[in-house]
Image (cartoon, rainbow, N blue to C red; front, side, top):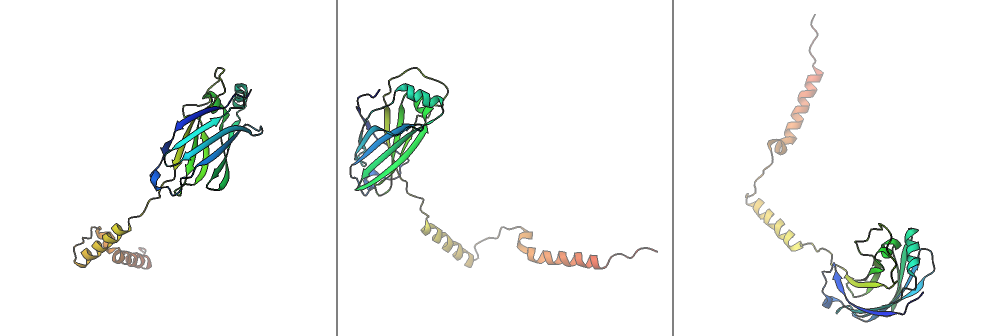
Length: 219
């Protein structure tokens, strides 16, 4: 039995972010249409996420389960997956993302899920993912519950990659070069490491000379 849509608003938490919200080049509003499916069933409308601002983290979500709790129970017992399709309209671009999680995890959490919106350095949405709370482990059944989603919406900003410190490296090379020219560097290598190129030929000559002049057998 389908339930009436329920409007839920959430504060957005930024995960894994080394980029400040003010650095995003684009902050246009967007709408994410959600559809979902259990196992191999056809997709049905679930609701939508309205992203008012990525910089301020202002979003709200309106959604309807469209499935009964028994549907989730059957999918969990059959070890099927819950699929979420997100159709994103952003900056004049339309994209569709498909994400999945085990139905038993969602069932045992009583439809408490986490939807993460992934944003690149330019402020474009490049992915949407769904997950159940980490505390769920598909350990058994749960009592009957109202099939209303309790959704947390997160925004994950792309990280800057590590930048090599070229100036520090060049400075270190220059310092080592100057120290070597002044004779200030010390060679801490062992005796063999320093003079192996002289020791090895002597050892080979000694071994070869011993092999070419074997001891004469006694009469």
